[in-house]
Length: 84
Image 1 (cartoon, rainbow, N blue to C red):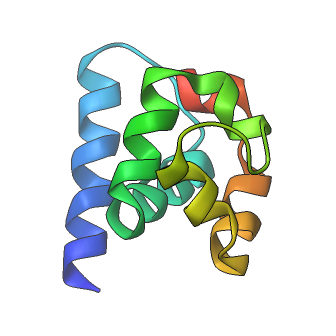
Image 2: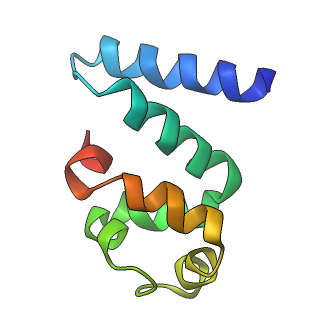
Image 3: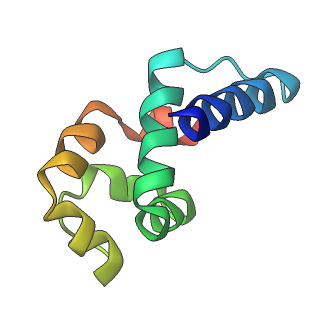
């Protein structure tokens, strides 16, 4: 839990320092996704349109989409939020 809270704080601080206004809920969801599925997050970071692809894309992303928890979290995010 402490790791998650620290990661959320760092992500929020980075976005503020960069002058970006990002929804706090999106920061929380993205941080959970990054910590739990780092390879899938890297693929989505490289191509934010993959967040809406639902099972398409690289194998690491396809494997993540088979996890119901990933589906729930990714379903709450969209391309605009990922780019933010």
